[in-house]
Structures are given as C-alpha cells and as structure tokens.
Image 1 (cartoon, rainbow, N blue to C red):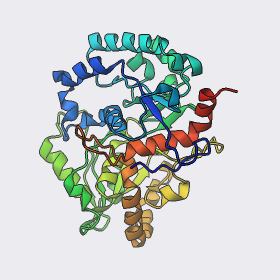
Image 2: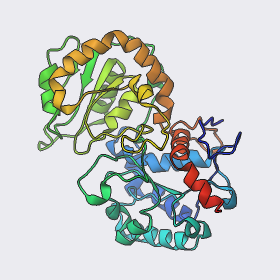
Image 3: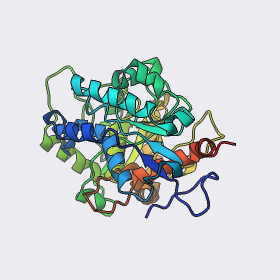
Length: 374
C-alpha cells in the first residue's frame, strides 16, 4: 500500500490518481533493448544514475496510484526517456516527434496547457539539449521533476516554481539493508574526484581527523577508470562510516548523497546550492513540502562552503547524536530510493510514492482546479 500525507486538495480517504500516457511505449521498449542502453542497467556503472525516470515510471505503473481513466486523474505523467536516448540522435528525433504528436492530440493536455502534467528529467543537461527548443517551450509550464535544481550554467536550468527536486537513481543492495546495525569503523569518509574547488580542501582539513577515511581526490585530467572492484570497495566503506561527505562538484547535487542514504551513512552536505528532494522552498512558503526543515535536519548535516574550516568541529559535535541521526535516516530512507519491481511483484514504492506525495502537496490545488474548472 502507498500511504500518502495528503494535501487539502485530495478527497478524504482517496489517493491522488495519476494517469500515465502510453504513446511512447513501443519506442521506449526498443530503446531499452538497445546495446547503447545496456550500461545504464549495470549496478556498478556510474551512469545508472540516469535511470530515475525509468525506475519512477516502472514503479508508478505497478502502484495503486495509477488510473487508466484519464478523466479521473488529478495528475498526469508523461514518460520520455530523454537521457537514455541522448547519444542516439535518430531515436531521439523519433521520440521528440512522438511526444509532440501525443501531447497535441491529448484533450487533457490542452485543457490545462500541461500544467498538471509531470515530466521527470533524469539528467543535469539543459532542457533544450534533451527535448529540443520547441518541445522545451511546449512543456515549460508543466511540473518538471528534476534531479538537479541548483545548476545555473544555463538559463533554462535555473529553478522555477514548477520545478521539483527528485532523487537520483542509485542501486541499493542486500548488504545495505542491515548496515545500520553493523559497527561503524570510520568516523567520516570522503571519496571523490577533484571536480570542484572544495574537495581538495576537505581532504587536507580531514586527513588527520581521528578514524577518518579520506582519499585524496582523483585528478579528472589523468587517465583513470572506476572499476567495479573500486566502486564495490567504496560502497563497502560507506557502510562502515558514521558520516559521509557530500561536496559539490560539476553540479551542486551529487549521487554521493543518495549512496550515503542507501548505505546508512549520515550525509554531510558541503554544497550551498544543493536542493534536496522533498525540502521546503526557501522562497515560497505557501506550498507545503513533504519533509519539514527539522525532519531533514534529523538525518542530514549541512555546512556552508564559506565555513569549511568548521568541518572538524561539526563532526565532533554531531558524533554523540549519531545513533539518533542513524535511526532517523533509516526511517526516511525509503523516500530517497527507487524500486524497479519485477513483473507482477508489488513494490513498496519508496521514492515513487514520496514524489507523488510531494507533488500533490505542492500542486494539488492547481491540479484540482484544472480537473474541475469553475
């Protein structure tokens, strides 16, 4: 079952109903089977982080949230595997044309100009790179579920009121499930490439910290490859750490945050523009978020980039409270992890349920107005 904390727009005792468009099914099915997509499904390949949309879509279809009657829907989800198709220009063109045709032929899209329709953007690339210029404008008023909201490298990436932060996809393993009960050998861990001004500074600040495991950041200009064994060892160390550093890199957000959550390692974010999923919007207090600031603070630590020298003291101050923080992390952890249920297997829903709940809280009133115009 999917138990959602409903907003006032949801009818008492009812789940928000989501209609999932199916006009992309055949193209997506062909795309998933292509050799160029195979590495995305490797649990030890870094680019599996682009599976957020696929995982959300799959779990949503298996959930009690879905309705096959569009007239009963409060929200609409439009699957479009933009990042999976990004390196295949011919299928991406085909997908864009199918999307344009499907949306323009939908009376529900025209009714609301797409304002109650959701797209999940599982890439940090600019919207026009994934959808093209005209489609980017067409969906600009829709609810855009994005893994990155803090990136300001391109004007179309700047956060807008209809943008919602959602988790990256990271795989989680059977060993992760019990790691909150196993002894933690390390006080704090840092493993990262040197993509960003902070990572090298963090290494030098913490390299002599008691019981810390901090590796000197890898130089991205040198030829190196993250092998399966290195990634596996890194994940195992995270399970044995009390706190895991999450510095900003090429973008403010990082998959390391979600790996820490999966591994039961309390994250310390050192990235001022990292917008967490389900968090309150600092500039829009009129919309209720799924998690309050105090709830997030119960299992996530943040340090302003300008106060990096205070990092050792932050860890010392937090260490006595680690058991309570770990307990809170374990409680909230499912909201940040996607599931990909097998055919006929009931999902626990996790991030999919949390995303729909968050969208309902933020946009439910608007969606109900579109459904029942006065």
